Amino acid sequence: MHFLAAQKQTLFIGYVCFILTFRLIPKLQMVKAMQRRLIKRGLELIGAVAVVYLMLELLDSHTSDQADMAGQNIKVQLPRSDSGGHEINELREQLRKVQQVQQEQQKKQPPPVPFVQQQPKPAANNPKPAPPKPKPQASKPIAPKNPAPKAPVQKVAPKNVPVAADGSKANSGGNAKQTSLDLGVNLDFAKLNLPYPSLKSKGFVLPMLYFDMGPNNLFRLFRQATVTAYEMGRGVVVPVFHRHPRMGDAAENPFVLPIFDTNYTVDLVWPPSATIDAGMLKKVINTVSMKEFNRNCKGKLDVVVRCGDVDVKREDGLKHFQRAADMKIAKEITIQSYEELVPNDLSAGIIGPDEDKCMGIVYGKKCLPDQDRWLATFSRIADNFWRPQPIRNFALKFIAQKLGGKPFMAFHWRYESDWLDMCKPSRPKGARDRNREICRITMGLSYDDNVRSSFVETIKDKMADYNLKQIYLASPPNNIDLIRLLNESFPGNFFYMDDVMKFAEKTESPEFLSNNYKASFVEQEICFRSTLYLGAALSSWTQTVLTDRLSRGIVKHDSVLDVVGKGNPGFPKLVFQFPEGNFNFGGMMKDKKV
Image (cartoon, one colour):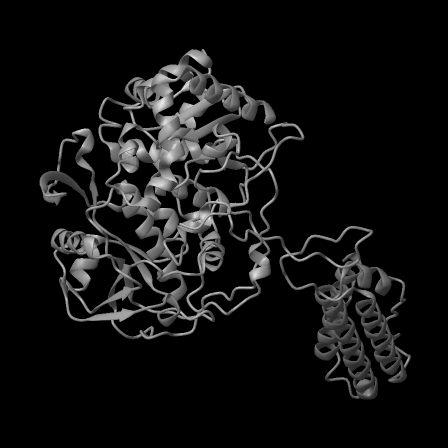
């Protein structure tokens, strides 16, 4: 910069000299030749200085620091006044050299890097970066609008993996006697190689409920419809439910329902949040309420599909549901097999994706013969199919605070005094054969000390196989003798519904479990989260718990009848019966046809 200032000063001096020369001697004839020569030299000097000035300005504004430093190493000399025009050429040559140095310096500089988000560097021993890992799911990702078929994700059920209080699979530290009963269903879902749904429809599937059934069976029908809707690419409707009146529920939405020739006032349950965690389910399938469905369809079903053999005794239940839902039916279609509606390759069946937007379905016997396929399909949405969140939170709190968060065994004993009706002479022979041994134990729990002591010892032995100390009993409240027996046999480690009710009054509110609808959900949630579950054969309530566990790869289970009956013949076997399909009760009893 000092050099630049000097050149400006020189330019100014030359200019002054030129003016003085031009003004002082124009009239002297003797010096005209000298005037012309001085003017010429002055112009050359001014031009040379101007060229150098412009050159330095150019270098100052366009070169980098390194180029500036390199340019300083080149000596630039001003032309002398008597040097003649050839020094101008030298000056130009010097300028060319400076520009050449500048270009060489620019070539040495790295090219500018565009702004991009830098990816993490791979590890030294892994030259190629690994693909990004998918985020873990407490819920599965939302299905794309037009999902392309993809290879099924391998989901093999591990052997003897209990579920912790938080629903995760954990090791309870049992011993070598641990076993899991084969329920007759394939749990190696990957080997089935089922296709993924590819259809997309704006329609919905509404399960037509048998309103003369209890809440658990209504819930099972809703679960079946969810799988159907998922396979058809449709949304599912959470239907209106009813709370069964046997516990004397106070009805907020009263509905007169005839059951066994007696009129009961039941309570209609409209909000989906009372039955299912709709927010979680919406992540994998469009889910709407009954009232929303009714508004969109203007109170009319475009079609009702009747699948399989519908029991004549259930026709009245369907009529009561239609009356509660306040939906008219435009037409009905009868099919014998589920594959007519949903083919095995999940292509369009008798109802295409753009047909009959408002569709209802009635599930009869032998409608769903392939239980392996059904369970494998449900396993894909099971992580988003949950009971209401308040129910889950309460069950977890009960396990954590009352059971200390420790591993525990839960068992379902459905065979209360009402079950003795199954052994009356008026019952069919097949029913009496299936229930004879059950009735013997049920009566013995009240009157036979040998049956009572054997019952307790076999339960203790089973718990010892899994190193468990605590036990939860899910059973109707009229099983007083069994409750007292277990309370005496497992002091401080036995829990049942009375403990749940007291805990709810203390931690929630007296109204939290004011009806059997919620109470049943809570007990199923507790049983689902048990380390070991003993199920009751022939019970749809047990089948619901087993479906929850098996679809998530939880396989520590056994038949409570096999345990207390010590494996003796005569008891119905615990098998996977969900959903109701082509099922033969005779296969439930070893070496015996019924």
